Image (cartoon, one colour):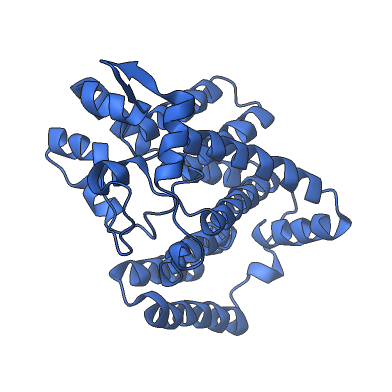
Length: 311
């Protein structure tokens, strides 16, 4: 790694105005697209504070701008609901899940989600809630670690993460799909402005006398975006880069979190097994495609320049 401060990350008047302009543009565009929310001020504030605080925090926030771009795209999806572009799949996906993974219980065929909604118990309510809370903190913690240990791998992990999300977003618009809890509460009738729902995770909130998941799902971009399960994609990416960087026993933790999130998604009726499988396929596809694209001299040069920016 090169020593000294990169000229591209030194605090010049041009850099300062660019940062402030970017933050202001984000707030203005957000206001007109999705309306004002306090979260937007928090995000803009964190970006500006980190940018102006010191050289290392400036490099850090510039590196994590990849994740900020992902969050902004995800948030802006509210302005362009996928159900406006293609019909929502409800009964077809439910019946396919039942056909492939249905459980014969008491003379009836139940989806795994329906089985666990009947036969779940307190320990699983709590442990699956904990696992599901890991879906973003674990990738971000891993990215933070890689930022200080290996900037090249940090960059590749971050870009792979966003690339997999973009692939998932494409599927969301091509194949809008209702989650299992939607069928449990609303049947097979499409209700356009359905609000997000904690579903089985409400049990976690109730056991802990908290509103953690209630507050999270109140901010959901679109309930008809269950296929693929990107919750299931993220730990696959983390484990891949953990193995690639030979992190030893910590990979056992990543593998445990991965399996835990997969099970939690089904147990709490947020995803079908088909959604989980699609999420895993999406992650693997994204990893393979990104690695292939990195063979291009243009991509290599772009990665080199970005890495030089945050060194």
